[in-house]
Structure formats: C-alpha cells, structure tokens
Image (cartoon, rainbow, N blue to C red; front, side, top):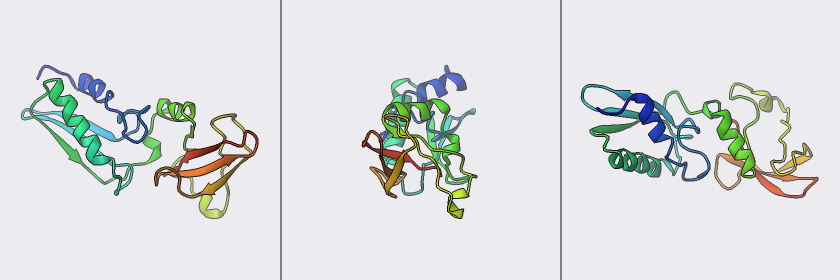
Length: 162
C-alpha cells in the first residue's frame, strides 16, 4: 500500500457532502474510520440519519476517488451504531455552514433542554441577530429547520442539533 492512513483521510476530505457541497464528508463526521489491513483499505461511514438519501451518492463518490487515486483493494462499510451526531462535525464545518447562510447546530447532542421547553437562541447567519423565529421544523432537508430573522428579514436553514 503506497498510502498512509493520514494520506487516505486527506484524500477522503476531497469528497463533498452532496447536500452541502461546501463541507466534505470528513468535516461532516460521516467518515468514521480508515483502516489499512493486510487485505484492503476499509473506510467506515455513518449516515447523518438512517434514511439519509445522500448516502448512496457519498459511498459512490468515496469509491470513485479511491479508484482515481489507485487505492485498491478497498471496501466501504456502513455502520449505524453509534448513531451519527452533530457533535462529530468539525468546527470548520460549522463555520462553513454559517458562511453559506445555514445556521450551524447550537449546543451538543447531549443537551436535552429543548425537551423541557427551553428554546435555543439561533443566530441569523446573515446578520448575527438573535431575533429569529422558527417557521417550520423542516427546512430544505430533514436535518434542517426553517427560520426567519426578525431584523434582516431573511429566511435561513438551521442545521438541527442531533
């Protein structure tokens, strides 16, 4: 094998998330592990949620780049447990979301204050105002909610903390 684990991680960081192309699958936390054993390279991935429609595309994109870089043999293993969480997203990914007009997740997946009726302050990614209101529990994808800013009046997606 001519590539190290670190080099393969770097290669995988070239694979964009198909739903949010400014973020790659490593930053998103979808790539869980890279293992080089005597037989093959094993890339382990976890969907952001079990019904994520982008996973087939992500798997195909990972396979394509591994073939392109002459990394063979390889396998891609999907694991569902433990379930993906927004805690796995890098700070860089969250900042890229904000810069693209998507409010990044606030808090951690262990924060259950929403269950107790405490509403999080979701800042507008356009003007940084806290004067925002949720319009719909679902935004452009199931993992986002639709918000509107009361100051700049712009609608925006909030990437839900899961």
